[in-house]
Image (tube, rainbow, N blue to C red; front, side, top):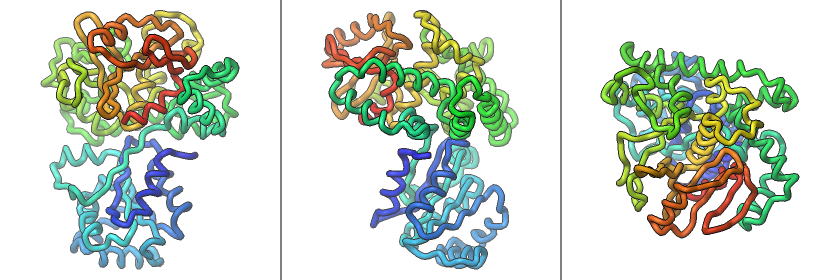
Length: 435
């Protein structure tokens, strides 16, 4: 299935001044598949080394880290030549061997003619835990997230709809109602299936029949994440990490979605759980949205560290963990709090995958769901789960900070009124241009 990141991988491949690349992201988001697809499309050959399965490969890096020697030994082991510009060398699960990571520095300095890429799921966690040095400035990074909504449509063979969405997004002319309704249906299905490749493949295998979708596919992914927490955390931290992760649905079910330690454990304080939250963020299975007290550039300077929201990396996994049925997405109740939580998590997922850092603004009486930075402009973004677009907080924000315009995401069609750009939820992925 097509991924937007492929264009960035091809750009890396064609660079004259190129360094080894690290493709990072949570488990099971499609990193290995994407690299193998890159090899098939852009290279004559490839050598794939999985450091989790092939433990003997680590011995090649014990003698020294001379890249020419390492290349030669890998050639002998695989009985094939590694030809610069023609062969892609892939180290999968690279976080399991820090010497392999360190060797990337020497590939960058002494053997830059070779195309070397590493894929890892918990590299940031490993670096934090083991306190290893890292070849800073000698590698390039690319983060892969679950499928965004546009990638979901491409996976379903609906590329033409993407062209039509972008037309209305640029012109703000209303989408024909029949198309608008069809896209909202795809959007609801995306919320339920989510963006994990295994879930999308299963959905396709049952003929895109949402009622035949087996949620055990998502359950297995969640169980794998929980298992990683046991494997890659200290014995006194594992219970805390798992408790925080499992608390996310309940955290998001509250009125303002703000993370509360007391939801995890009565009387809990940040000092007890902050490192566990950091683990979830480093592993990319959690997304943090930080509160700012002033919407000014740079936004990071106005973060209130004690106030934040914690979303799941994939909205389909959130629906599964919370045991939310598909029927809630067709329910037109205006005040279903968890439907609003699902919608916010979806938006957070699309924005983060598009490169946006997540912020929100809150005063004593008002709150705006997300704050975007577009070069030298600050843009408030409000999220509505339905077509009810009453926006007292957004209007107050615009009045207080003299905002030139705002964005509102909802199930309503495209439009522009009172300096508010109305966008349907299914085009959220296009806001990557603000990253």
